[in-house]
Structure formats: structure tokens, C-alpha cells
Length: 193
Image (cartoon, rainbow, N blue to C red):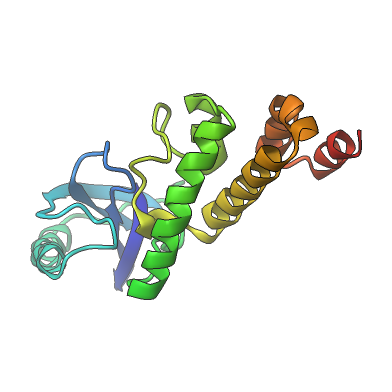
């Protein structure tokens, strides 16, 4: 899941996560933490898959659930000590239709590149930080973070290079391994050879 947003009230932190892939459950995850302790998690069904971000009705459902959670958790006794949970920053791409159109096109190119370079499901999952067994096909454009965007562009460029030069085709497995490890000197060495 990918963090979509957060809200603070006092020392409570409320985080909203969305599925980033169509193979994940179609629901919000609303997590409440306080002083580094996760004190509540709730799943809220989505009406629509969040390909380009959440639907307005799904956001309204989240807000209604958040109001109920705020009332409920305020009655809980606060944890005495600091916990180990550390919240990350929101990652989902903003709801800009032009950005999503570009990312959707990048996703299509990447899926083709992934196929032409014969990436295994394990390589794809590791390279794009996906759950094991998930491929890029099914990833929602709103979940193409800047890190994923850069990695996807690198691999699509490699696929274009490989289709245009027979010498490169022979070394695709070595180059793919270098790309996945982000080992630029190894890639450069293979291309020089």
C-alpha cells in the first residue's frame, strides 16, 4: 500500500493508505498512531480502484471514518513510553490529470520493456519495490513515485537500446542485473565491451 495522506490532531497521527496495485485489497487503510505506537487500524472499502487517486466519494467515506476514529481513540489511555513506529511521508502522486496521463503512458512502455528484457517477477518486484509476485502490469499510475518513475525510465531506455543493437541483445541479462543493482560502472563496462 502507498501512503496517500495524513492528519494530526494533538499528538495523534492519522495516516491514510491506498492500494498501489490492482492485486491488493480494494480498501483504504486508516492507521492511528500516538507517540510511536500504532493504536488503531481500520480498513474502509473503496468504491473505485484508485488508478489515478481516490474518488471523491471514497475520500468522503474516509473522512467519515476518520471522525469516528478520532472520537474513539481520544478515550484511550496514552502509551507511557515512546514506541518504535515511525511514519513516512505521503508518497502518492498528486491528482493532476496531465501527470497521470504521462505516468500511464510510461507504465505501458515499462510493461513492454519488462517483457522484452524478460525480467522475472522477482526482479520486477525488487526493482519497483512491489509486493512479491506483483508485476508492473496492474500498478496504479498514482503509485508511480519519483523513484519508480526514474527506474522505469531507465529500464525502458535500456529496452530501446537492446532492440536497436544486436551486440547489446547478447548481454541483456548482464545489463539487467546491473540496472536492478543500480551498478552504473558494471553497466558501463558491459556496454564498452
